[in-house]
Amino acid sequence: MKRSKKILTLSLVVIVIAAFAPVLWSQQTQEQGSEKVNINTATVEEIAQLKNIGSAYAMRIVEYRQQNGPFEKPEDILKVKGIGEKTYELNKDKITVE
Image (spheres, rainbow, N blue to C red):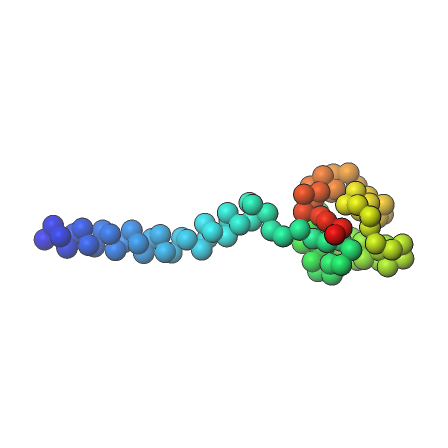
């Protein structure tokens, strides 16, 4: 009887861990940060995933680089109309130009 209770308890623990593992793994990956977004090559959809940048601003970024050439440094995103210091600060660790 005691052995079956232990097996049942252990089984429940394994089931609970297995059920929550994908959620916990996903949160940890998001907190560590996903891959950087290269604002010289990224699509509108990829750029729109940055914080405080929707599809309209992402489109402005793409249009800016098409008209002015590639960004030389991440801070150059501030040259795009509507992208301010706050938005840059939120995303500076996620933006690359390489």
